Length: 358
Ligand code: NDP
Ligand code: ZN
Picture 1 (tube, rainbow, N blue to C red):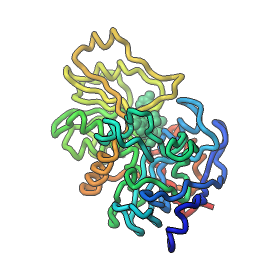
Picture 2 (cartoon, rainbow, N blue to C red):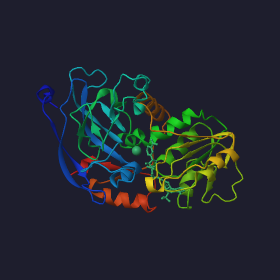
Picture 3 (cartoon, rainbow, N blue to C red):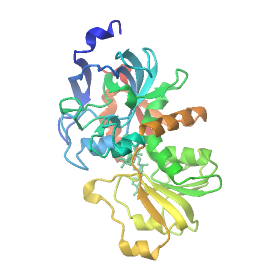
Picture 4 (spheres, rainbow, N blue to C red):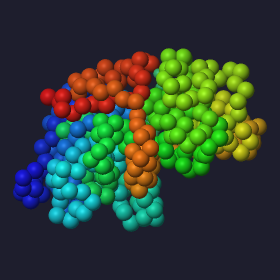
């Protein structure tokens, strides 16, 4: 960017792929980003991961979406412009953006860098959200060529990092790292990972790295070899006759399932973290009596992770070479990727190469 000052009051033209309804297909879509504020950075997006949350959002599976919708909250790119008060980034740096682009910054949660729980309800999601800090305009995500974001919500990525593998860490990475840390997983713990896709595979990698004995719960044997190659001890394609008992189970399942089936597999004192977010109409419930009969086990939900923890996760992952398994796709292959992710044909993470945008 040659002269960023000339852009600061202007809206930034952007192009990407959007759906115009919950049954629509992706079409080219041009729009404008808000102007680059004094503390904003302007990022040229190089890669964007495809998260199952994108599919739930596009299809209005949790609530009615805001259309046209440009999904994408696993964003990795290069800084091409900075506002005048930016101190964390300079032009040419790599930067990442995850699920959030702003929050009040003043409440107790924000002060603890748990921006996803902003007590004023001002956590602005990267897409499919109303941006109360910018005239209540809708936010548009990373399936696009650029994004303007406060430096406070951008994650620093070293120049030496494999940038195409960084994008999925911004959601799949932090969403699994955070509960694994919250539950204090350590060497020798028996942990189970339910759902072995984009998030599940990251949970496996963090668990194996920490020296835990990791098992996978899937619904078929298709990815057994990949699991064993990642260091998984036991691969279960059915929940029947499992003798093991676990210290920790993380569920990344995006469809209907029975939570009680997993509760029974916990040891006394064991913990289950739920991160998978099935569609509202098939949302599994926990039975109160089952909780009593399996007393002494704890179940909790976990929602991405704060900005500080996201930076910590990224630094940790790079330091230890923990990266997602990715398949790079062209921007015109998103519909196909969604189909594969919902029909059991996908392996782990699709990442869109933004240089293939029209
Ligand atoms: P993926 O589609 O990449 O992976 C889901 C995996 O779960 C697939 O391997 C799928 O297998 C498997 N699966 C589906 N149903 C079952 C079942 N009944 N039993 C066992 N395995 C099953 O999705 P992601 O990893 O991207 O996302 C997973 C979920 O996490 C989504 O609901 C997403 O919205 C949510 N999420 C939550 C976040 C949070 O902050 N809490 C953040 C990000 C995502 P198959 O190949 O057979 O279909
Ligand atoms: Zn996600």
